[in-house]
Image (cartoon, rainbow, N blue to C red; front, side):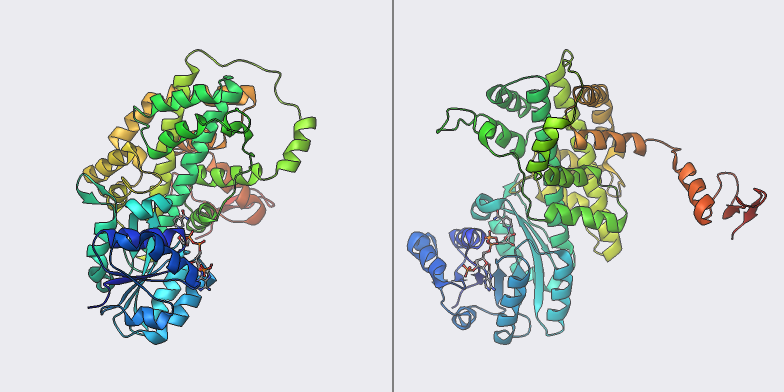
Length: 474
Ligand code: NBP
């Protein structure tokens, strides 16, 4: 008997995923382009399970049971194509390739189609949870044909995180669906982290609290509705002291946020689909602004801010409420985007399933996801989470604090792009009639782009440069 599954690409993610598979009793073949990683895995962890190391792809493929199931865990982009090109001549019809990296969903669509033409199955599979998740139970989002998922379902659901006896792995939909929702998950993670950073900024530059004090505040917040991996981790990071200086570590970390691209991809796709995901997009912009350290340093010396001011009573609790309300908006936007993509690409993605499998294993795991799961159970076709009774009431209860926090931030000159954009979205969304009528009027004036009326069917144009008469443009 050969190995039930193989993993090629044994950097941090692939190595941990292979160990996770082996620890659950599945015989696993392992391979890496540079042999040293394979050797290291076997030397260090070979006794954790039934590993079959291979130095060549030929040996690796030959050691697998059929249909062959191969997880590709290499750097996203060209390396995935390179590995597929090397593997294809060694495979037979019905074999299954599982790309577990952060590939762009359009690449996945292309690869799935090309491989299907050769009789090979391809599962573009989002894996969330970082290295720790890969080892101890990630959230797994496979996308591809049903025929490809069925033979790997048992392994994937077994190695995934489990919450209340439910695995954090489920078949998301065809072709690029799995990688799309993983991308959107990362986009939501960007928004979540930006909102947390803004709360921290308000408490430190606004309210003058120290990092250890704010760490305690986050610990308390983690006891309530905000309970999540990211809030808990924020408390840990803020509470950490730098050994070299004795100062809070966060105070000596350079304030330039890096990005690998999934947040930007999410924003780009949202723009293409015409879905407003303002919290995610602002989070991407905020990282870009943070990276302009030199310019910011110059600007800090010459651009004046407000004269000063103080934070109102009850500010810390108000920031907590504003954070929660903004988070509801960020998730409402992210879920709306996934629904729009699902419609666009015919994926039939179930948002309730996503909320279910993101409750464990992944970076955005939170008590909050239970609330989202319940919302979709109540109303599977819910167009926007803000229209669910629970979230409507939660935001309504927080909105006074939310407005107070954004007002204070403006008065103090503390930038809160994601808090503010979320509030603006909320106010825009709840308006039955907005100012877009004027935009249509302007477009008609300079471009004869026409408009529709509220009182009559049809399309109209005003003869602005003639006698101002309205004509039908149907
Ligand atoms: P990396 O993204 O750092 O990729 C390193 C791996 O790719 C090594 O095994 C390397 O082989 C292999 N590789 C490269 Br680079 N070019 C290759 C080629 N042309 N042919 C064959 N192999 C090639 O690894 P990672 O951090 O483990 O991440 C793997 C995937 O998982 C990525 O898509 C990443 O975005 C995603 N992901 C990462 C995390 C995380 O927390 N790190 C979380 C979730 C998802 P070598 O050893 O021979 O150089």
